[in-house]
Length: 126
Image (tube, rainbow, N blue to C red):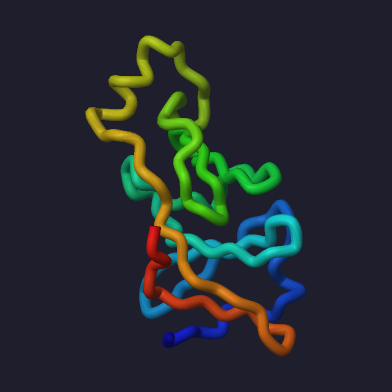
């Protein structure tokens, strides 16, 4: 599998998102309970970047519409509930979703070796 060096291991920290690009594709890398996890930096709702999202444990929250995702599995935990990060009444959530069904993030294979983090653009099987 083709892997690209993304950063030194010490730059990938718990509770933080590390943004990078591989061959023009935006990615995010984070450390969750000591484990390196990588995803394509594209919220499945409207394709916007998650790089300014809030990280709590293994969960990243989209800064635009508050969708929440597991950083290691990509699983969607909560679909759109806000506009520009401002919570909206529950009755508006379907309208904010614009007819789009909940979807996961694209997770990417990654590993640490010799003090460096490596990521592949070939998505992990679900």
